[in-house]
Each structure stands twice: as C-alpha cells, then as structure tokens.
Length: 170
Image (cartoon, rainbow, N blue to C red; front, side, top):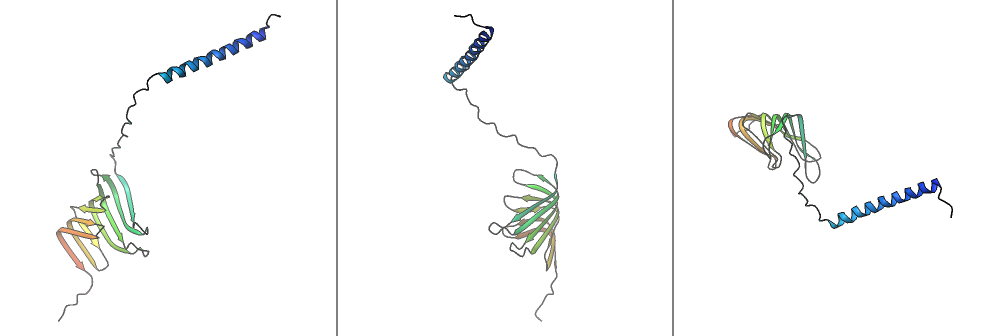
C-alpha cells in the first residue's frame, strides 16, 4: 500500500473535523432535550403611553351602525385624555347629522371647553354652550349632550331665541 499523499491527509483531516462538529452538535441537542424546560415568565404588560402633549386640530366622525351614514362629527382645536373614559376638548364643535342618505345637518353645538365620553357618545361641559338649529338657538352653562337620545340639557343661565313667528290664539 502506498503512503498517503498530502492531499489525502488534508482531506481526511477535514472529514474528521466535520464529523467531530456534527457529534458535538448532536450531543448538545441531546443534552438540551434531557434538561428540564426553563421556567417561563408571563408576558409583561405592554407599556402604557403617557400623553403629555395635546392632539391638535382633532376630528372624530361617527357613523350609523347599519347603513354607515354620517351621524355626528366632533372637532376640537386641542384634545387630551382626561381619565380612563374621557377626552378634554378645547373649542369643541359637534355637528349632528340626520343619519340618513341626505346627510342634512340637524344641530350644531359649540363650546370653548368640554369633555367627550366616547364609549357613551356623550359630551358635557361647565362653561358656555351654544346650540344652533334652523328654528332655534340656545345658549347656557353646565350642559350635557347625549347622542343616543339626541338630548341637550342646559342647567344654568339659559337663553333661548326662537326664530319662527309665534302664532298665538287671539
């Protein structure tokens, strides 16, 4: 038998090195499979964002559930969270629509400072509100607006301007 050449020796060393690496990997896999599973930690709660700056020029359109017609649009020059379920709004403008295909504006509410409760579709404020409709305009303080019933309640310093002629029996 002829002595091995340098090329054959080099090749055999390489094969041995690959086999050793494979055996080492296999041994590591077996050891990992036999060791107890590490204790898992519960997923930490996602970090909560703290809002420090107000959102500017805010707009929130709301639509009817079935048809998707415009129901109400809220606007504010600045908004900020105010508790878990409330939003403080500066220069609030609420436009209430007919809720049908005509998208007719039914009522407009304006207030310099108010709070909107999105889960309830309700707005409220201690400062002045101005309610504008085709035939009537109402101003006052300490008010609430419930969109579900389309009810405006004003509790203080109420002023009503009725634009249609009154027909009184004579």
